[in-house]
Length: 169
Image 1 (cartoon, rainbow, N blue to C red):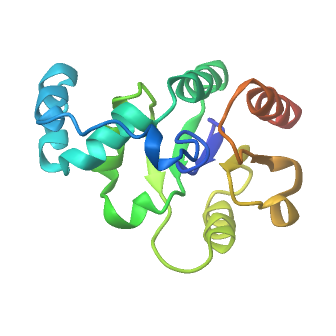
Image 2: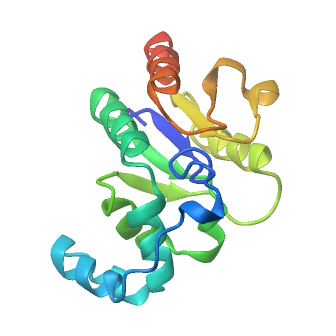
């Protein structure tokens, strides 16, 4: 695998933890509108509430920093978020396109402990360069490959991620 991998959690990383009073009302038929606008028919099959979360609650600044990192390193996304349990890979790809985040190439399987699943992925892809973006602290098993994002993926986390990927090059 020539491209580095970004193991990506959504909650806390792209969707900073908000207070309930910050949530906006659901936009009716957003899934249908975005399916047409983005040319992503898969979005029509996804619950409109989920599409609204990605559209409204994923922080555009966090998403822009991630997109910039992906472009700079030609990185690929492996979804580690619990969303992987409830959505197919094609649904996750469509959802991430709402925020212009691609390419999503894989998702971890459901079950087990996230760190074990990442280690299993790495065993099946030896030599891959990678970083992990998560709000759950995974520094012990992954050291400098892990970027802690408890409050979002902003400039500080972006710079740490960039340094980690540069160090591996």
